[in-house]
Length: 179
Image (tube, rainbow, N blue to C red; front, side, top):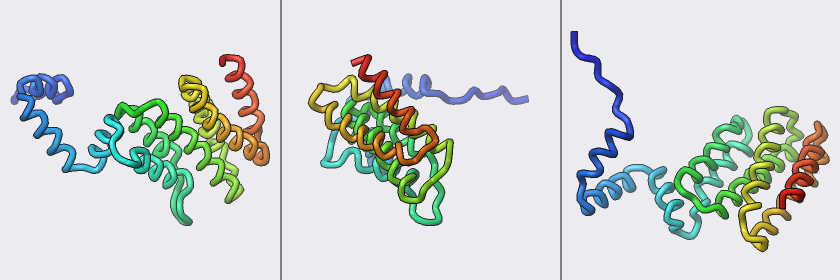
């Protein structure tokens, strides 16, 4: 019987990376960069490169929260775009922008088609709270523009019923108490 092979892990890769020279490491990163758009997005986000670092992440959020007619929604895939940006080492300001954008897209979609999906509502409320937490770490001037946008989201959500606007009121009250 052949010996059982263990799974290769990051630890194994890390050991190999320590053997590379700076030139070899840069070549490896280049090869990864040209091989996959997602790798490009990660590096652009990590180093804040380009005019629209958030564009690919916003496009993904929009696609899954406000799809074209006949396409499915996916809260999980929209949230994954935000997690991908965060894991890429994205900036707090960019993270706040993506979270607020998520709230705006979800609210716009609900309003445009009169969506009545409790899971979608719940995810919106969770993201609203996450956005509040994230913007509380930003300088006041920057945080204010995001707060204003979330206030617009909250205001629109009162039209939906299902307690969505009320829960956002409570979150804002709690957020104000923490500031």
